[in-house]
Image 1 (cartoon, helix red, strand yellow):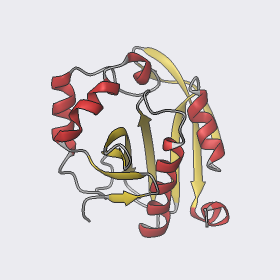
Image 2 (spheres, helix red, strand yellow):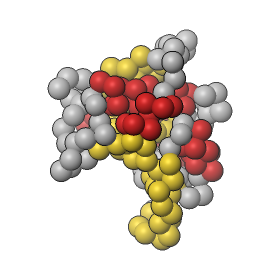
Image 3 (cartoon, rainbow, N blue to C red):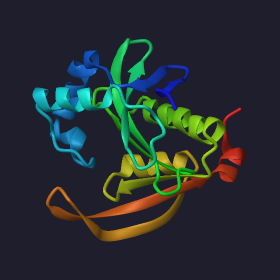
Image 4 (tube, helix red, strand yellow):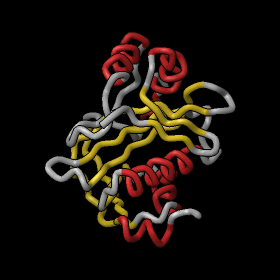
Length: 185
């Protein structure tokens, strides 16, 4: 496999680069932007170490999360990031996670990025299934999954320790055959 590159109408999704550090840190350091994510606010050094650990990763290693930059074409810089992993032991199942900067939310970027990733996974990689888990308090992500046509498969109550407390999640999924009936023209 090679480095992932996805282009949509307004976005480019590609490997994180060190030049993404400033905008990446700008939202990854804000507690409000991290509240439903698996990460805690990062200082500048932690953000740089994280980016350096991601920038040369190649897409497609089953079991490995790779974090990608979501770049606004208009602004010319990073406005969020997303993670993609092909599941192990079956890489025909993919999982996605997404974060959009608090400065760029409610503009349709999360939906556009997700549609770009879904198109790539279902049509180029030919995955059978995409799954997504969402903190059950994160109503914006819940609505996003529903608007994309994901099916809610479960609501797991206090199933994992999340930032020192028991957390609950919704699990969503979509099969390739469901995508075929929903995908944009």
